[in-house]
Amino acid sequence: MARIQAVIGLIKHCSVEKLENIALMEGMLEKAAKQMDLTLLKTVSHKFSPQGLTAVALLAESHIAVHTYPEENSIFVEVMSCGQRDAKEVLALMEDMLGGKAEIVLDKVIGGN
Image 1 (cartoon, rainbow, N blue to C red):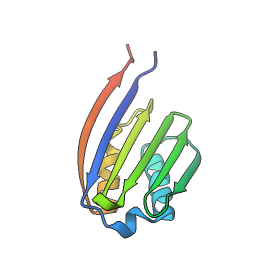
Image 2 (image 1 turned 90 degrees about the vertical axis):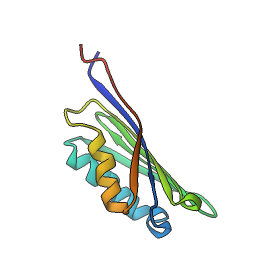
Image 3 (image 1 turned 180 degrees about the horizontal axis):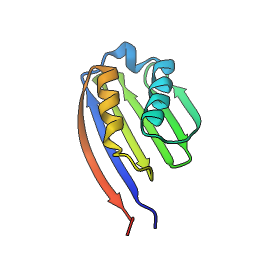
Image 4 (image 1 turned 30 degrees about the horizontal axis):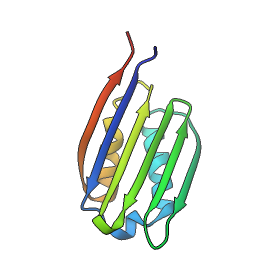
C-alpha cells in the first residue's frame, strides 16, 4: 500500500467574512495543493443558507476538504494525501491565510511499508 497521510484539524478564531467567501476558500485549496506539489483535478464548493460552506479539492493524490462554521468562527479541515510533503503544511497555510489558530485533531500515516 502507498504511504497516505491523513490530517484532520480545526482552525478557530477566523473572521466570518473569510469563512463565507467561496472564492477565497477555493483559492486557498488551490494554493495548498500547489504548495504541497499535488495535482489539482477539480475544486467543488457549496454555499449554505444562511451561512457556512463546504469546499473540496479533488487531487490525483486524494483530497483536501474544508467545512466552515461561521457561527463559531471556525473551519474544519481534512487532508488525505499520498504526496511526499507533510500534510500538516496545509493547516499552517490555512491558519496564516485565515488569521486563526490551528489545532491538529488527527495526524496518521497509513501504509508505506
